[in-house]
Structures are given as C-alpha cells and as structure tokens.
Length: 97
Image (cartoon, rainbow, N blue to C red; front, side, top):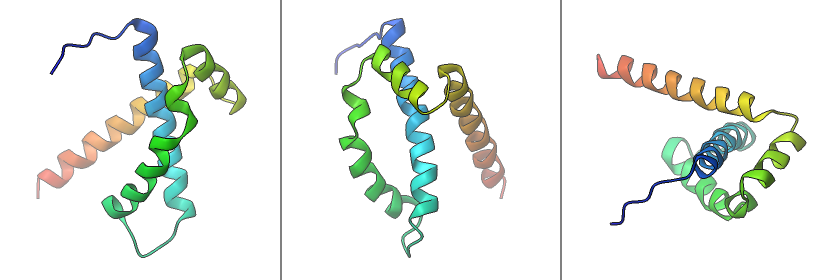
C-alpha cells in the first residue's frame, strides 16, 4: 500500500462525489421498489455508480455539475455531513440492543 495525500481540491472533489453518491443512492432506492433490499440493492446501484461520469471529473467540472443540479457545493457537503451524523446515530442505537 502506498501513502496518498490528497490536495485540498482533490479532497473537496472526493467529498462532493460522495455527497452526490448519497443523493443518487437515496433516489435509486426510492425509484427501484423491488424485492431486493439493503446491500443486495446497493450492489446493483454500485455497478451503475462506478460507471457514472462524475468519477472522471475534476473539481471545476464537479462544481459546474453541482450547479447544474441547482445546488451549491456547501449544500451538498452539508447533506453529506448530516447523512453521516444520522448514520452514526442509527448505528449507535442499534448497537445498544
């Protein structure tokens, strides 16, 4: 394994990609009401997500993409932050049982 230190713009781009993944996953779940749930459904999403064009975009292109969606980078980063806070709280609650 190699040590990889991201630049500030690479880190922001990675966080914005993750925020978009979170939003895309939420939408994917709501649009695909099948017998598949949880990780089984995520595996299908993951294949499509990894092929999505955002992975080849640099930060300026991601900013434009985000803007075209009607969001600001700050809004998406806030959505991402809230997602992980909620996920941690849910995980902590289920660990108590």
